Length: 272
Image (cartoon, rainbow, N blue to C red; front, side):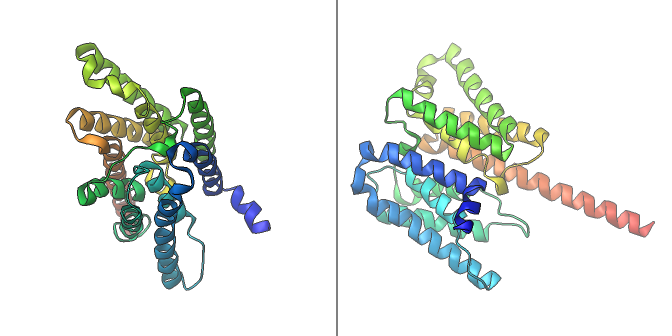
């Protein structure tokens, strides 16, 4: 019981609780109990792969909460009508990519974002972001915003989220002055809800997002600019996800450069 209470107090536990609420709200209109197979397909392979990897690596059992969350994100974003096999392969790819594409200290890309960019290429899968409540009346967006803002504050990532959302909608607003028809859908459901879901629950992923406020600002700005440019270049449904991956790659490069500089400084001090 103590372990459950302790877990509920962590950001991962709280994100899991938020996802449970979103699932309870969105599932009835998306397919109800008919989503059970897809839910299991998204979660079970991810959890089994990550748990096995950790058990071999650390020689002890731990429940892979991160894999569970990644599987749920895949479940929420891929179309509710997608084959359960596609969800299984996509969530598996997410965990394998997390374990393979990494530095000694952390993984580079948001696992779910990387897998969800891969899925349309590999399977021609559709992404509807139904778990972001985009198919429900607009009033339900309040739940998404309140829960997301609360979690973002807990993670201390408000500058990141605010920068991303401000830049994202400002850029599309500027484009609308030139060609409103080109970007009109960006201000409608489910595209607004998708941007909010990504900002609150994917961009803020602790291992692949910065902690320093200054870094959060450029990180959020880069994700927004990349997403907008990708959408305007007709990249299709993955434009938001590409924004995340571009920012992830830039952060990895910055972290590497800083470590190299710190190593050089330490070596210089020792030598002197």
